[in-house]
Every structure is written in C-alpha cells, then in structure tokens.
Length: 321
Image 1 (tube, rainbow, N blue to C red):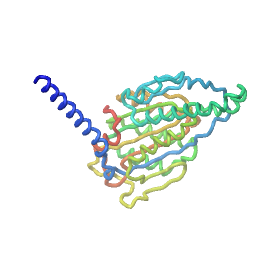
Image 2 (image 1 turned 30 degrees about the horizontal axis):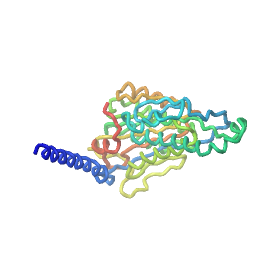
Image 3 (image 1 turned 180 degrees about the vertical axis):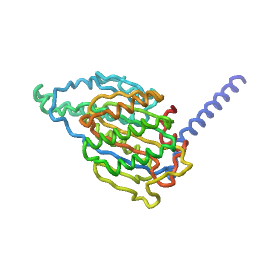
Image 4 (image 1 turned 90 degrees about the vertical axis):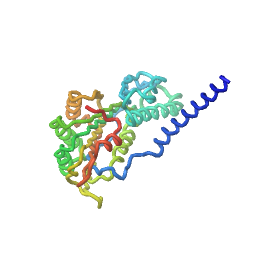
C-alpha cells in the first residue's frame, strides 16, 4: 500500500512538473510583446567595413588574443576549444548581442576548417599571400533608459540627423561625440543602462553588426527620423510625425552601436560612475578608429509614449541604476 501511494505521488509530481514546464514554454511561444503599441523612433549612422590594406602572417591555431565579453563576462582567447563555447549557456546579462558575436566567431572558425584543405598543399609563403588575414573588430552596444523629461535629447538627436554628414568618418565621429555629450550633461535622468562589448574577426564583423542593428531597429514601430550614410529621410509614416512625445510619457531609450578597430573594454556595472566613464570613452573614439556607428532612439513621434513595462519588455537586459 505504501509503495502504491508513493508511486501515485511520484506520478503526480512528474505530472505537475510537466504542467509547469509546458506553461513556461507556452508563455515564450504565445505571449509576445505587443509590437502594435511600440513607439516610433529615429536612427543616425553609417560606416564602411573595408578589407585590411595589407595581409599579415596568421596563426591558424586560433584567434589568439581575442576577447569575448558576451553575456556580461570576459573570456580571453588563445585557442579554439570547448571553454570558448561556455558563454552561450549564460554567465549573466548578454542576451542576443553575446549570442550573435559568439555565432559570428564560430562561423569563421567553421569556415577556416572547411578551407583548410586549400592551404594544406601550399607553402608558408603562399599561405601568407592568400590569407585575407581578418583583423579583430570590437563591437560595443551601449543602451540607456532616460526619464522622459530628457526631451531635449530627442531634439538634439533630430538636429544631428538633419545636419550631420554620415557618409564620412569625421561626420560619424561628430555624431558619436555630440550624442555622448548630450547624455553626459543629463546624469540625473539616467534610470537604466546596459553595456555589452565583444571582439569578432573582421570577416564576420559587418554581418554581425548588421544583425545587431536589425534587432534593435525592429523594436521601433517606424523610423520617423533617419540619416544613414548621407541619406536623410523624415516621417514617411502617416500615423505619426517626429516631434514631442506625450506628456504622460515615462521613458526614452537610446542605443549606441559602435564598431571600432581598436580593443575598447567598457565596464557593465550599473552605476553612474561607470556610465560616465563609458560615455567619455565612447566620445573619445577617433575617426580613424571608427568603422561604423548607429544611434537609435525611441520614442520619436508626436504623442507617443514608452512606459516602464514597455521599456523592460523591449530592452530586457537593462539594469536599474
């Protein structure tokens, strides 16, 4: 009798666990953010991923010296091995940014193995001449959630979009510097933040940058203000025009996505001191080091709002300051 009761309890326990797990899976599959209520936004950016001018000898044993900082943690390269894949299983933070960076590096590694037969019968000299020798590119994503009283930042970003030459490196550097300065001048309005950095081989840098950009742009209902690579457009959406958001609006979200030639590490600590230092470092990036830039903000339309629950839903990696 005792065994029968224990067996029934064990079955009920497994059944209950199955229901809980099924409910969690269903919530991910069927309970999605209400994209229809997403606010419109704006975008400024541009850049050019050009191949290195002269190849150098390459150590095909691994991407030595590369730093992986996805998922809020750092991993110093120096070889290809199983530990390299550990960040995908979660070491805090990170989200899609870390995942895309990891996948881009894995893609390059897989391609290098596929193409290894092309080099096996060549001399060392021919290997050096044929190799594209991708240099390391650092990708940085800085996100901040501001109180809606920072509307002058929205105005400043729209002014930059209308006046900046985003077809040149110097013009993009000016956008980056002016954006970071506008944020630095309003520390009392910072509420949430998230900073993610990663290094990828040059061969996969452009595609990774574009994927992260698309991920962030998809959070906008429409791009009312846009200036990308010198192409300026304003309000092609009939539902809303660029302008003052609703007086009940609670938050403004700003994303800065940067690709640079040098290794720049930013601390992801959620405090004002680290945010200040990170913005200063971003603003000091030279035009020679800057490869690509995107500044994306939300909301940007007249009468639109971005409330706290919408901010957290669309930007789940934000940390409260």
